[in-house]
Amino acid sequence: MFNKIRLWKNQNNNSSTLREHIEEVKKLPVPEHVAIIMDGNGRWAKKRALPRIAGHHEGMKVVRKITKLANALGIKTLTLYAFSTENWKRPKNEVDYLMKLPEEFLGTFLPELIDENVKVEMMGYKDQLPVHTLHAIEKAMEDTKDNDGLVLNFALNYGSRSEIIDATKKVLNDYKSGILKESELNEEVFSSYLMTSDHKDPDLLIRTSGEIRLSNFMLWQLAYTEFWFTDVLWPDFREKHLIEAIEAYQNRQRRFGGI
Ligand code: FPP
Image (cartoon, rainbow, N blue to C red; front, side):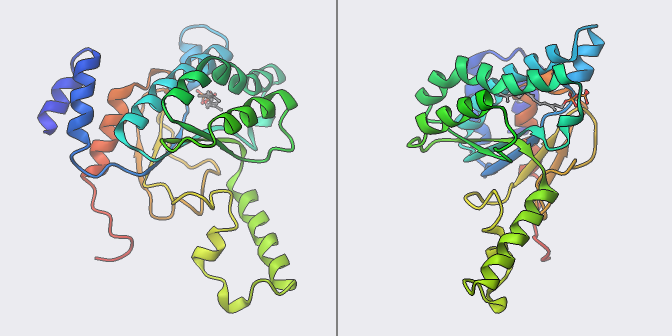
């Protein structure tokens, strides 16, 4: 099976070979929840003497490709780190563009996502998002709320440390008001206070562009996740790379601390 996949990796991605390889990969357990730190848009643009926002635009097109493949593979949740709570420090024109991307993406591809039974969700701090960004996301969430295929979960204005602190504050409030007893607090209960309460923890984390760090992403949820790093810049990330990551995942032995 793996030889077949390797062969395919060296070929052009025509749709019939892609379909065949999707079927091959699905013969082994596919990760239910894949999280991706989409990194390298700026470097991709710089290499081509283009403005950074050109890299983000190209990266947006990759989101479409990877969403389609994730859905076809039967992945249940795809969480994409689209904007961190630290990304506000970037130049205004870049932040403005990043805040326009959800509208641009959903304005173009929402009908396709609806057709493909994808459910759009978002995790992150909504309050600081521009109204136009939030409207685009909320409309997509509303229009896809009954879909039961892939959950496409955008981490937008998301930061894991703040998420953990906020969860802790909610736990303290519930403790003070008697809703939660100290003896009832365990990992599962704590998880239910996080933004990811509706999702299982990621099985596989992918980070592109050669950076090997978490950048304040899902610190609690990634405790037992398998990590896969690649030097490929996000705008160059293709279906074959996701297949490669899943193939690596399928060869890992997950022990969750056991033997
Ligand atoms: C990191 O690359 C990337 C981001 C901060 C933005 C990611 C956003 C997208 C890929 C598009 C998202 C699409 C939708 C639909 C919301 P970087 O800019 O830090 O790259 P660099 O490290 O090379 O500078």
